[in-house]
Image (cartoon, rainbow, N blue to C red):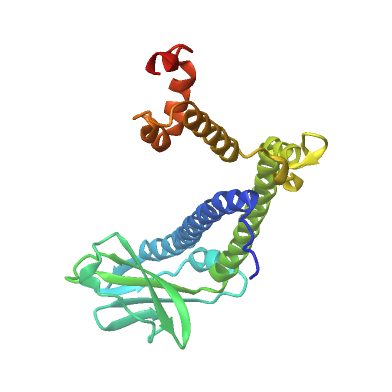
Length: 272
């Protein structure tokens, strides 16, 4: 049967220290992921908000008809982003004033006038981020809906770069923690290691180690005690065979032998 190997104290300490550290690093990584997504979404949405509000400021009524003087700066700030397409629409009720007719529309009643609502949608099979706002116009019961949509290529690219940087940072933190913990555990256990080596190499008696100690030369206390009791019993029999305490001595030789040896020498003669 193969002997089971004893667990390593160093390995146990490393596992107990590295597992919680790694779990904490993963938790921080997930928190960083949420923070990255929130930051990128907020930064890009602000540009969409600026474009939608810039268009809303140019909505007017002329001859009882709604007109829009589309500012180039409103879409120019979006078109400067690489690999992204920009779409817009200005509508009143079901009528399109300008822009893309098939752009997904938000519920006008759900957007307070002057506020901006963001939502994800799909336009022509491409994922887009839409910013929608409403603008009140003179003489019209319903507000005008202004929407600006942008593809999400730029967001995805920035998000991927930040996530790769975060993953590399997490790996570096875990690796650094593992190295530091290894050296710390090794240094902390060095006194125990030295003590173990000293115990293994310590000599007993005449240069014999503990594992080679000859147990045959160790005196047997039980054997010597039995021999001493036997001598006491023989001595008591030779002195007084008719002594009524003889049987008691035989049953408890150690105690009675000691008492017999302590009795005065003249006690036996008196009985005779």
